Image 1 (tube, rainbow, N blue to C red):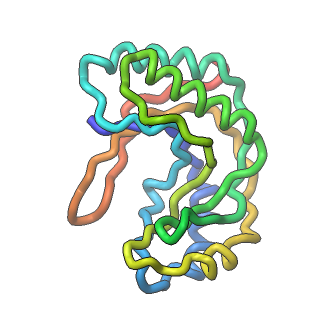
Image 2: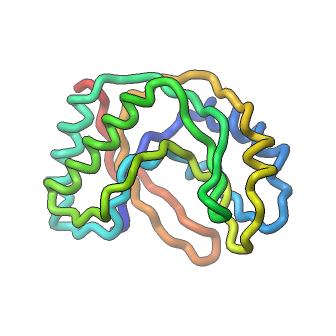
Image 3: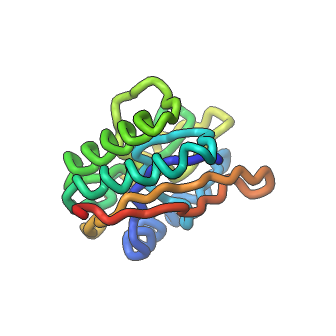
Amino acid sequence: MRLFAAVLPPAGAVAELATAVRAVSAAPGLRWTAQTGWHYTLAFMGEVGEELLPDLHARLARAAAKTPPFTLRVHGSGHFGDRALWAGAAGGLDGLRMLAEAADAAARRAGVPMEQHHRYTPHLTLARSSEGTDLRPYTEALAGFEGTPWPVRELSLVRSNLDPAGGPRYDVVGAWPLGG
């Protein structure tokens, strides 16, 4: 199964961001992600064999228990070239990065062949472009967005189901409280 570790924003944070995104979402050339799937990816694992799941779950539980809760808010925007438009994060970024590193290490120790390590950029993907759309106007329109802070209290393991008709669908297959 195709898995990733993530922090899922609460409904209130999603609703705030959805209001801001609504003002720019009529843009041609962009495929907007479903609000129900908005998340901050911590560690993308790709295809993970069923035999690795018990150890992966145990290691993610330990990683979550060692990480104290922290506060985040959705903040600003950015883009990865002309491929993806995203919303950023602010607040407890040290806690978020620490949790990302711990989730990555947990997956590696459980035997998941993780891709090459990249510098972690906290982001929530809003839209993708396959047409080379200039994303700067959308980034500028959302640059001043400041969401209400919310406590991060949980690490989630999410399954990505690729649906050719409607894009990816995400299902939480495990969740562990931060700080034990």
